Amino acid sequence: MRHIIAKLLAAALLLCGCAQTKAQNDMKNGLDGNWPVGSLNTAYAKYFIGNSHLASLAEGEGKLPVHNVTFEPGCRNNWHIHHKGGQILIVVSGKGWYQEWGKPARELKVGDVVDIPAEVKHWHGAAADSWFQHIALSVPAEGASTEWLESVDDAYYSALVPGESKSLVAYFSATGTTAQAAKDLAKATGSAIYEIVPKEKYTSADLDWRNDRSRSTLEMKDPASRPELRSTLPSVKDYDTIYLGFPIWWYTAPRIINTFLESLDLDGKTIVLFATSGGSDLGDTAASLQGSAKGARIVSGGLLNGRKSEEELKAWAQNAK
Ligand SMILES: Cc1cc2nc3c(=O)[nH]c(=O)nc-3n(C[C@H](O)[C@H](O)[C@H](O)COP(=O)(O)O)c2cc1C
Image (cartoon, rainbow, N blue to C red; front, side, top):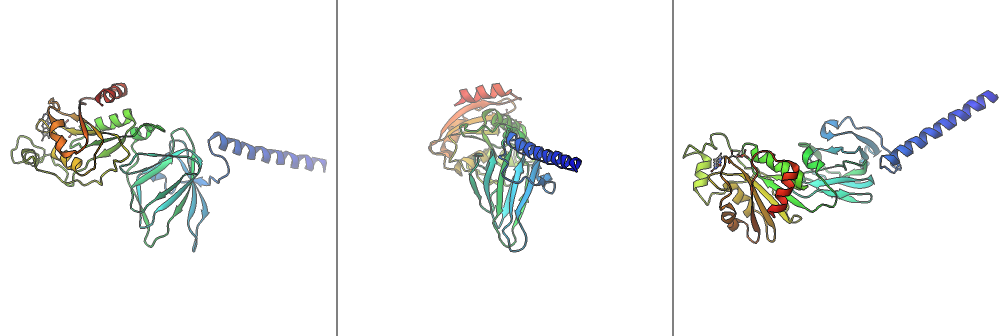
């Protein structure tokens, strides 16, 4: 009998020890331990970078689907859109981020509520150095669905710094060179990044500058040409500085840059131009774009040809303003 009691006591101590270890681990992880973590979220893993966990708080017929989502440090979901019905997030533990397309990332802490409207492209996830938990409530709607899109750029995510000043890198790139410079610059300056996408993509025939009938030649010959944009415009109200990048075409900015500038309210903003080229510099591009950016101060930042180090880009951005 004494033997059995001793065994039971040992088992109880062991269980107690485990519970304590879990709570201690949760606290160490930055979770307060009050909310269920659930199981590894394997079903949606392909739409996440890093590990997430899912605990169902309510689901089933006649119920509002409520989940608690736990993100390990560095874990975030891909850009996605909730169609028809939005989603509400309530942060219950740890630190994280939420971002809507074209807007700066918003820092999230316990008690924050994010009301995600339907049809808005966004992502959410943990801070790089913290676990993160939010309750997710799906707004019920007939025919509701989620469209999963590209992952959040690694360079951009790792450059997110809480409390940093808000700037945007917006760029157009026909063949990828300016895109690389833009990504490096966004990482170095902790800026959000936005790609200016033409409604009609430029083919290599379109880009043939030796052909005086090619699309790019015709556009550049006509100062009134305004190629249409495919992308939804960014909301620029939260940015003071916009780094605007493009390839030099015929010694100046492609006409789609005029389309972009004329589509936004840029009053009071500083726009720092950067470009890549085969050798030509920005020349009088800043002056020629001024008419398309009413009320903004346009600064000729310079060429970013060739990969630059983070330190070089930081110094470049500092001097450019
Ligand atoms: C239509 C067209 C015109 C160009 N005009 C110039 C030019 O005037 N001076 C120059 O140095 N490079 C010129 N280039 C080269 C591009 O500026 C250069 O390759 C740039 O890095 C491409 O950037 P992207 O890959 O982001 O499109 C031209 C390229 C194209 C397609």
